[in-house]
Image (cartoon, rainbow, N blue to C red; front, side, top):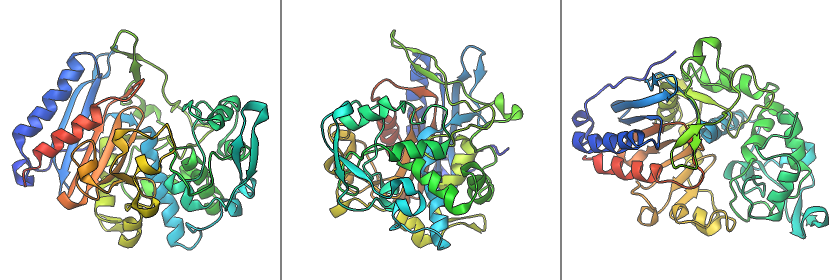
Length: 409
């Protein structure tokens, strides 16, 4: 077990201590008002943690506090870890961004694209081009999520029982076969649509490496980086540190809801959202990225590969709002933000909803966890709580504004 600790004062890191106090008070007020159970926030500069606050409860009913060793369901923050695992295989010459997905997963060899109709009357056509690994990593594959309720294809996902992205009774291999049997929403590479693509990427990792996804990531990524608590399940010894998951209630507060079934190895190993991690684990991962593929003498990726991962890959320098499928992604928060290989990338800070450094990259999880790396300011930030909102909220926007105010030098 690793425990995150503060290593420098804010002043030593060029941060404004009073602004960081405002940040803490802002989120503490959300806890005191019953909007969040508790939270952990960590800000590091130059690799040293200069601000670390844990406040509130990890389990409200039991009265257990958030601590620096609390474990969090990071959900979609699993995606960048999966991407790192795939990029390592690419550096070894076992995988390429331009590999057709069907080369590794034959069920995807002849993808078809939605044309018209709904339900049993859906009409499809052959895709204009092959579905490539790069399309999976950039979420331009034409895959989708069942929860959008925005297109006839996501209705087909619901009819297939994919509300939680896993086919009933199936493992990762079986579920990706179900995805492959459904039409793509659009031709690969022509739009951005956040989707189940990282699950397909996880299955490719299994096929290419010859190991289950959890074993591969543990052996090749998590252990080498010293991410001691991160993984797809919690042990009996870890269970007491796992935060309870909450959802927004009808009364405007929060209430406990079921979370990932982390006790025991899951049948479905989700490269999209299956992991748990501590703040120490997340700090190790963000530091690995900030240092462009190396940490404490362990190099997993070359600097060029990390640079490739963390630059915008949307055609013509487009952002998520311009290139995103509509109506799901036509929202102000997607302006000025592009997408790399498993992470979002700030391409135009003048158009982002919150103050952001150019080239900043990161990703978030559905239970209100987030991280980002700001290369220009030599800054990494993480925020963890466990609330699944019913709709968009201001937590991340407020966090970015308050951190921006604290960067004094």
